[in-house]
Image 1 (cartoon, one colour):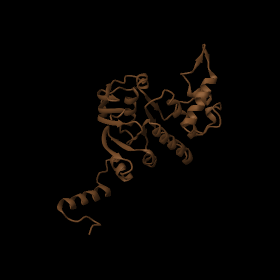
Image 2: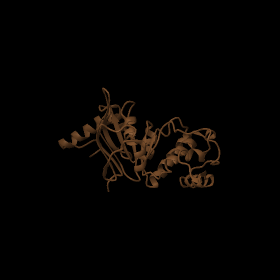
Image 3: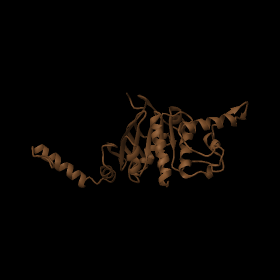
Image 4: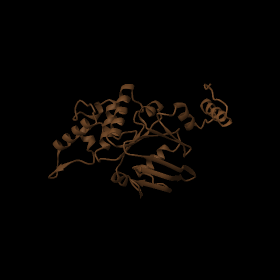
Length: 266
């Protein structure tokens, strides 16, 4: 089965700066792929390429197996790609319903259909098991975790197949972070492909299926989140290939190649 979204050989230059060089990434339905890397690794540029904000200079983007061009955010949304940026872009003076439908209000005979929007808001939040006191309270009165869940919920109104989350747990407390990570797992359970951009390795290891590392604008490894240690991921992020983990692996592989027993074997 082909991944719902696949990028191959993506390159992007800004003047003299080569932001991305021959980068690849895949995400399937019902899969959480974490995109990690140090500052300047190219994560933000990758987000913009997928979201249609900054089309690549070269490379191929495939959607459900067919080659596509994403030249604008509208084209990305039309395909089924939703993006929740780190700043959330919520209006504090509006209530939850107003924020969910901002720019896509439902109307009946030219008049805002408040009843239909409120019902759909409740249904959406209930589907995602999001606990909010009322859909009519101003967003300014919500906690950081609740605000994040509202922003994610808004991205789902268009029934996207891939959701990109840019640092969704940044500046959140322990309980609020747990709420957001629970929501990420529910998105996966409902069949959405999720691209999670994060610096927090604990969060990444908790919910990701695969981890894609960017370093200096290039792929620097794809890892199974459950089978790979945090030290190995950090080594790929920083480029610290000469560390205890890699030296231990090299010794083990060398012993096996020479036919010598490895450590711990009789």
